[in-house]
Image (cartoon, rainbow, N blue to C red):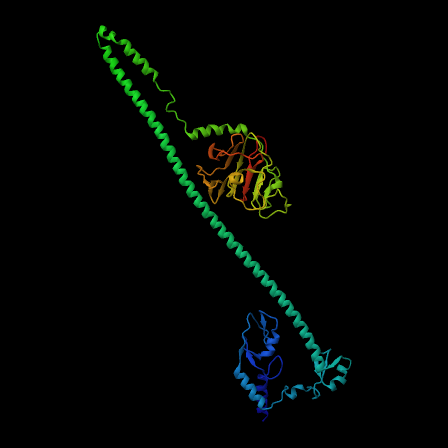
Length: 465
């Protein structure tokens, strides 16, 4: 009988919720394998959206999965019909030393005691409370901690969600920037293809015109050559005649000789200078116009670093803490020259070296510093650039440039009166590009744009750094 009672008591314990210590009400199974009353576990997880803790095994799961345990519910109903005591076995509530019922809780020793224990020397000076009162007090403390933890959990959840939103925004920005870059390069590719066809067409037209002029000149010279040969033959025949016959029309023959001599072509009739030769001679004169150009730190983008002597600029590893004035570039990584090129002719040289990304030229001083704008003469920017390994003039559409070798030093020549701006390979004095004639504003300044750590360097005059 004792064994059967113990088994029944063990069965009752298995049918008891570990939260409320009563028979299961609407029992549900959770992921860890334990079971709880549906109302108990629901209240325990109140306010949680993720990271659900299980009270019995202390494990934590991301999602809550509650499955009704009907078999356990049926067992509970059968146990209830047996009318077993609702409390835990009576012997478990007895003092092991005095076999008296445990009715008090010792605050000092943190354990239940009986009334006999309370009067013993070991507990006489201790603070004790009735078990129901002590249980309620500690339950209130546990609820207080639980509410605090729930609030912190909500705060953590809000923080995580905010970070996830920020991550999503960053990912969206990256996608937009990637699409923008791809779209820009596709646009540039189309412009380059159109410009290539225009240049080939222009070259073909110029070739036809030059060949036509040369052919006309050759035809004229061949005709003149034939006249010379005919006259030589006539003179040879005349010299073989008798003296009397020779003198009969000698004046007419001499007259034709004089006319032929007058038709002698000029020595430079075929000396047509090529455009390249003319350009090179012109470029050799530019050194006489070379002047002082320095950088204006007040216009420097925060990511650019200007040297102490204001002749070098490079893209830094992080943004500098600079005042955001109206003169400072904050969108494009640009800096302007200090000098205003309002009149006359000007020439300066810039070493681009191994820089992988740059743009150089002149611009109107009123160029927008805070927003994205197309860099072109239409926006009063005249510049050439190296972008994605391609050299190009920033016209609309873009004009591809084909230097014989990657230039290391660029010469920039501005002629305000003629409305011309040209860029040269300063080392071999070859013209890279001349912009169409323009009416320049009176507030032109040198323009520097770089996103390369190698940067740009304005070459100094003799004896300067």
